[in-house]
Image 1 (spheres, rainbow, N blue to C red):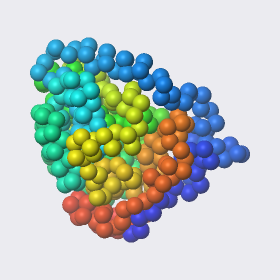
Image 2 (cartoon, one colour):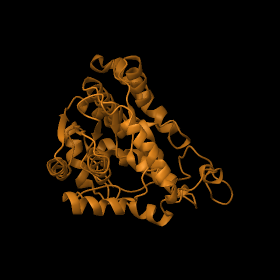
Image 3 (cartoon, helix red, strand yellow):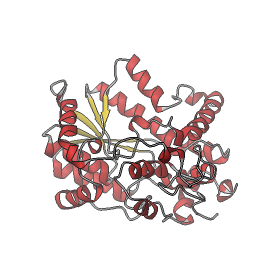
Image 4 (cartoon, helix red, strand yellow):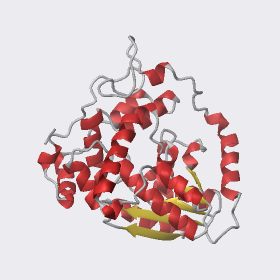
Length: 338
């Protein structure tokens, strides 16, 4: 089993691939998303207006319960900074919620423990192996479902239920300016991924009664929450604030003693071990991962250069990093040879 990037030829403006992509390319080598891009570039000077809107969202239901917001905290830089902002910048009482699908990195969890202790905030950890059978089925059947998207469906459902049970009106994530909110994957970059995931879930739910009520998408999770009167505002402070990742990484290192994990992909990020397997499968099935789409969006908005994105997307994990994940799932390296 060889771990490599199978993206092939990339757009000359962003990092979306021509090979197996859901988008088209013109004669100049530009993808249809770049050639048709008419959105305004990100302007740092406009951030005060954006932050005013963020503050309105955060304070609209401030007196509703014990906690003003629930922060989805993985121990990575983005979610750690989000938790810091809620407590220190906006003087709110957040509940730090950490989700462990059984594959979290120990040093990421250590970051969570240190952060909540230094900030003096309450925390809640949810750990479960409920999804192991589904993750294993994706690998063994060579389904085109994206493991990270399936996991996000599960995660968001848990978060919404906890927030509703504690009367928390706002859910805070650490999504970057290039990431889509609420797990939306029905965009040109993700149409095949969304279909592959939905097709797998439809089959798997029919065959496995244990998962018969599992939602087909994050959108469905949110619709269900609305019907059950448990909908919350779901936002990320990084969409509104001007600080880039280097700025707030330095801040949380100084203020909270935050440390980057020894193992990460893309470079400088923090994800669970299952992420490496999800990226590898996406590259095999689609020629790109959701990180290509995220960074391409940031390139179009003038937040990230193409050179920086290419550097971050270099495969920096090895076969040995994936083998323990396969073993936990009861899978073999041969299951990845297709």
